[in-house]
Amino acid sequence: MAWFQSSNRKVQLPAQAQTRPVLDNDERIANDDEDAESLKLTPTDNNVTEDQNRDPFMGVKVRRKASFHRNYIGDYLDVPSRPYLMKILEKQGDRRVLFADKVLKFTSTGKMKRRILLITDFAVYIVDPDIDALKRRISLAAVEKLCLSELSDNFLAIIIPTEYDLLIASTRKTEIVSVLVDATRSQSDYELEVLLSNRFEYNATSELVKEIDFEETEEGARTRIEESVGIISCIKDIISFSSSDGKEGY
Image (tube, rainbow, N blue to C red; front, side, top):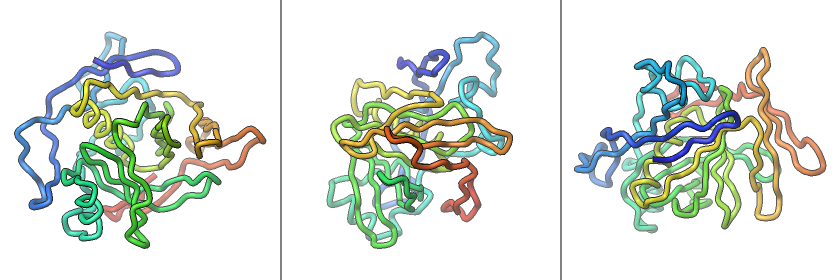
């Protein structure tokens, strides 16, 4: 049982057995004997409906209507059909892909770059799709916590104390959080902390700490990234980019 921390309250993260499709090198959907657990948050309030029990962030995070009934697929890129991705994974000894999709990654200067995010049961991979090159591999054991806002935005920070942190934007942020929590739990007794706050810090580099601030406006969530010298960027979170299924995401 893990604690899910919000800026206003804590809720518990009980494990729930549920089959999750995974990808193997030899087949698109592998039949795994062990059921993967799905992330489920139970608000401390007693007025929880059946629909709330199925939604991981119900009661603690503002959600878009389109995300309430989204089915989790896992591999949105058909990794086995991409030899360069398979080569990267096989070189690291990884074959079981839990999640694969295109995301936006924020650099230390605040620029956004398109990247491929791969999650296996051992690590997180960041791949440059333009040159088919591995840019970073993060062991799941090195991840301390996940940080995200309480608003309906696309941002997610993966905190890695021994290195530097990873800030990404994805229309499938909820699924990414679920996969990371489940994978960490299945490989160890450690429960990955998920922090909900509209203001938090992350290490853009090993020596550069930045603060990300979220504000709800009439136009949507507004995101500011700051460092000690002041605001370096201000982003309205109506970032529109084509997701791997060809639909525009926000």
